[in-house]
Amino acid sequence: MIANEVFFHVVRITGILLSRFLFLLLYYIIRYRRRVVRINLQKAFSSPHLTDIEKKFYLNLSEMPFEILLALIMPAKNLNKLVRFNNFQVILESAKKSNCFVFGLIGHFMNWELIGIALPFLIKDVAIPASLYRKQSIIFVNRIIELIRERTGALLIPEQHLYRNLLKLKENKGKKYFVCVVGDQTPLLTQKHIWTDFLGIETPFYSWWVKIVKREDAPVFYGSIKKEKFARYSVNIEIISEEPASETEESLLKKYVNFLERDIKKTPELWLWSHRRWKRIPDFYKT
Image (tube, rainbow, N blue to C red):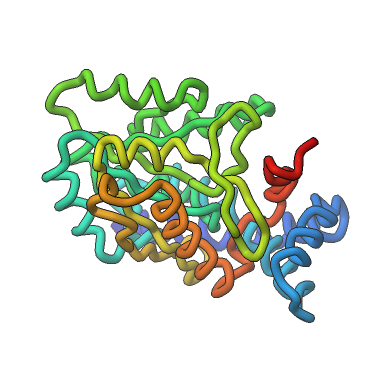
């Protein structure tokens, strides 16, 4: 027991030190996507402190891989040391009552992958954990994602033909699924989406999860992520809708976006600014 505690702290301290080196490399030497990050921040905020947010973002980004490594090598029973879930009981109760699906939505808040590692161990006794998978162009990244899924036992759902693949799960009579969705990814051009105001900018969001929760009347929740320190997070569970069939697709999406905006404004340094979230323009501007 003592040896495990010592090992955990040694790995944690090593991860912190290595992350500081990675920060210097990414921010000052490679200048990884510095222009993209600054443009995104300028679009979202009119703040004189963008450089402070930018540096804190890169520091959090640099800590991510070492936090994931720590989660992958430590015993599953100790994962609650890394992530604490508040109000998770509402999800467990909904899963017990559900006919098939319960949905949990988060944003690209660091460290969303760490949340994805810890969460299945809480839900697996009442529902099968499942998550969306978009294949990456870098083989190494794909392998890391596969290792994470193998570690948690989560069901991996390919993004291609996603709607059809999810509905196929209903054929497994008596089984229930908790579907975790990172809902702020940019939809592909071929994917159905809904435009809405996000941080003052017209932005496309996936519509597939909205359609499924309405069709199946599946309860849907939001996880608000808070970082306390390196490899220490808390997630507060909030209700988006427990009866989505009675709501419009737009209202369901807007509830999610409102939660997302609130958290970004509160802790902007935790959101993933390095992806080109506003690279598309609304359909009605297209020629």
